[in-house]
Image (cartoon, rainbow, N blue to C red):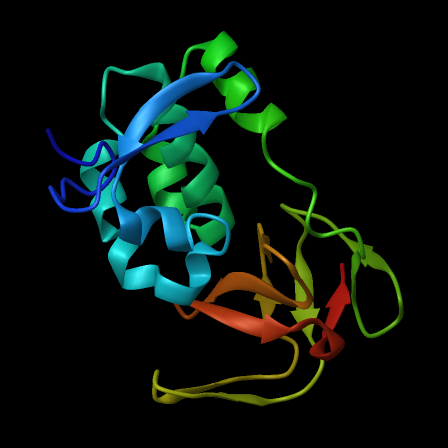
Amino acid sequence: MACDLCGSEEGLTAYTVTPKEDTITICETCVTSIDEPTKDEKHWNCLHDSMWSTEPAVQVMAYRLLTKLGAQDQLDMLYLEDDVKAWAEEGLAVENVEPVRDSNGTILVEGDAVSIIKDLVVKGAGFTAKQGTTVKNIRMVPGDPTHIQGKVNGTSIFIISAFLKKL
């Protein structure tokens, strides 16, 4: 027997996937970081495999964890039947109560296009995002109303929303 999420064989326990009351088997590491997966993101690399499980309860947990981690690329690949997706979304808490706002106070939503209002040095990428650059199809950062994610010069980066203006 192994953890349904990461495959570990140590410290296994039953975990109830609410609200349907189905259970999956998970290890102690998964149990301790399942509520705040961003504290141990490397552990959750295992979701690349477990998201393909044929068990709906495992698919639901993979969907919820990938959503909390902001792993949009994996979520885009994950196909869930309508009833399983509804179950997965039903269990997600609404974390981002405060809306993301641009420099003018305009509310930004997923998919908006924005313009950068100040030259920004992109750490680790070796370039500067120039003032006036358009960033299309932005994504929200789960749980953080001060940042968005978007592509600049073909590189996916996080940008402080105070340096943006909605187009």
